[in-house]
Length: 338
Image 1 (tube, rainbow, N blue to C red):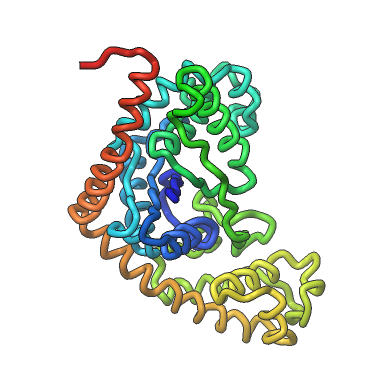
Image 2: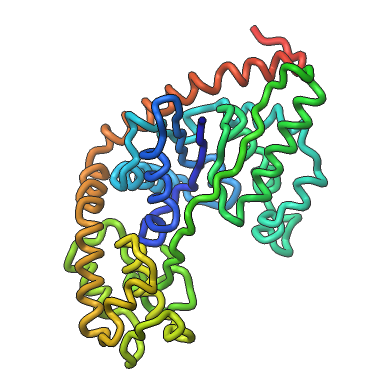
């Protein structure tokens, strides 16, 4: 079993990033047996499909690497790298562009959403980045790829590209590409803004009080929780009582996710309490969860050499795994290489 998954490097990592994706990666790594492995990559090549600041992308890539390691990704047990250091990803994308079809890419929902009405002004990279996503997993012969609802269409495209390439350029008994299977991770907690329970927690929110950053110290965490928007009612004893109370539901959801309990269990314990009692309890759970993560995160950010070394070692291992597949692809296509 070989699991491959990527995440775009974004700055100002927060609680929503941790509970929404990173924690599931750590759990997958920890559940792997000796004959299986995980490859996790920072999708910096995908990031340039949209307008970006080069210095910010460089900073965010290192920050994301630090966050992943601080949250529990072990570079000795998993392969952690950024795409730009493994050129086989981009090379295979170009080779697969001959197999992918315009009609397939035109149907991609995320292309339509991100390009909006100005498709003529969107970059070619934005249109073809699903082919790079396919290359990301196919070059490593991934057997499984974690996917949420928004990525299922892209994995289906990767399988279509792999199947067509195998049919066109390989014999039936010797296909080149493995068709990866989806892994549906456990339901990730949907973490909302501390200032508006109808909006997702986001780094783009102008108010820092809207989110818990992984770099926040204990005093900042408790301050933000205590100032989080709520309503005057006490917590109910059952989930139905949170209907129409978005901010209350958000705080209970955060508590449940951090303690690996259900919302119903949390309400059974804290139902009847006002937020004057519940918020400090939530703050303490957050502080204890984030304290080691924040300490390691900030330590790594101050040690650029250590971060560079982690990504360089991971990239070297990833290149070793990708090289045979890329070479076989060139050969299957009849391309002459020195």
